[in-house]
Amino acid sequence: MVTPGGQAPEYLRLNKRFLNMVRHFAEADKPIAGICPTAQILTAAGVVKGRSVSAYLAVTAAGVEF
Figure: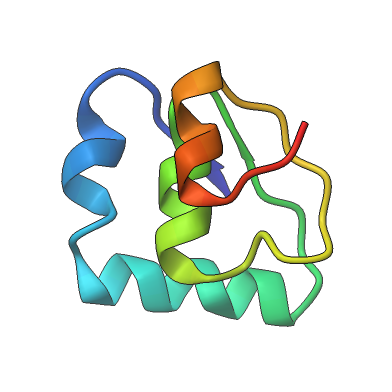
């Protein structure tokens, strides 16, 4: 799965159907890639715990570790 950058993640992280799709990919151990604020989506889906992610500094408030 490749998630978009820009402002899209701000809207997608509120979309339950999309978050369920992200959870499916994470639970199936399929690769998830993205750019810019994609960590917001991964955090909203609850799939970042125990994983390494890179993101911009403001996402640390959402529980992402660098």
